[in-house]
Image 1 (cartoon, rainbow, N blue to C red):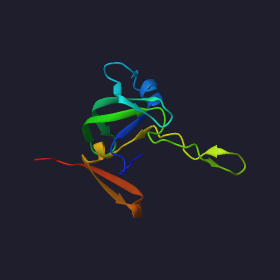
Image 2: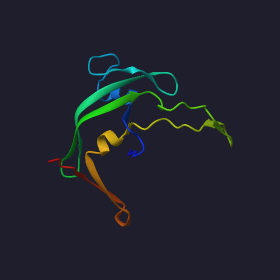
Image 3: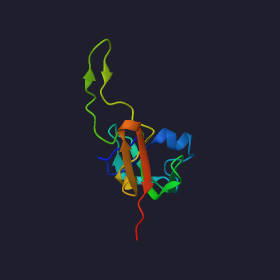
Image 4: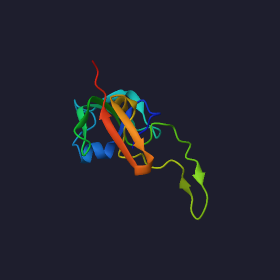
Length: 125
């Protein structure tokens, strides 16, 4: 998911552990300064040397810091939506949310008629 309103890239903790083999408290997955997610679970940090976007001509973002959280970083009051059954309004966080710490390295072009998003690298001189 892309989130231009988020300062940070956020990776769900179970994905970080299961898919990438990261473990909380390990040297490569450090405590985020005592930060807690919306449910009081610890938040960790990890810096990815690069994130490459396949299928888009080798576009790569480098030195990507990611917050690793179990739940949403915002405090949820656990509001309920009533209907056929009560459920919380805060859905489980996506596997990966790319925030502005990654997106500032890229140019995004949305072509709505084609239902496509094109990504190119920003080259700094």
